Amino acid sequence: MKISFAGLLFLIPFTVNTFATIPVEHQWSYGQGAVYLGNGLTQYCWLTGIRGQFNSNTSEVGVNHDGQLWTMSGHSGQVGTLGGWAMCVNSLLSSSQRQRFTWLSYQGGSTRMSNTNQSFCHLAKVRGSMGKGDFVRIGKYNNEWLLEGSDPVAGLAAEAECVSNWLPVNVWKTFGWSWPSKEITLTKVNTTVCGLLSVNGPMNQVWDWVRIQVKNDRYVLSGSLLTPGMSAVALCVPRPV
Image 1 (spheres, rainbow, N blue to C red):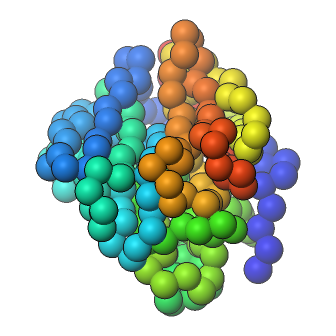
Image 2: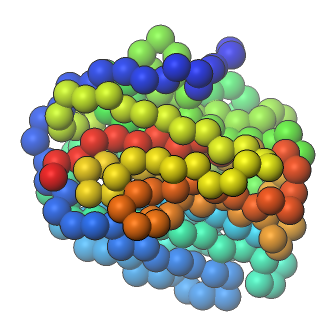
């Protein structure tokens, strides 16, 4: 099944939720325990970047939610070689509006997620070996979000968080970055939330990274300029002012 990100701009109906603050950025590095991100009942947190050597089936970075807390953690087969970033904002999202999905390379195919007319999805966790040409991504096919990756790759896996019933009716925008481009300017931080739709390897050196960050009043998407072939796609969705 071929999925294209080109022209992924579409209208989606929303119901009321509240994002009240400028995003707060958090970072996790290998050697740390789980990093506290935010209150699971009053905040929404999402993965905004990964870095380092994804070179074994135990290499992992992701954002977790247990119903009460948001945390960020990971695992590496080599000391000091992995890390990641996440952002959080205040939110009145209910637990029934969030759903987590998993894709595993050895299962093949794609993981079907939620309806694109009723929800948005961002990558929440990346695990496994990502060499040249390897990827994990969220795509849109026949009004459905799909989670998938390069196949077969031993141990490669991903998780995505989907949020339903979003506000207001507006255009959702995708942005792509690829080596050797400089950073790509995205949308305003006070009106949108931007997360990762895809990451393309190689991601197997300590200096490899892709990341969404805040600069002035905008999100920006960028990555390492030291490794040819890397790329990423971000999805930005509206949030109330």
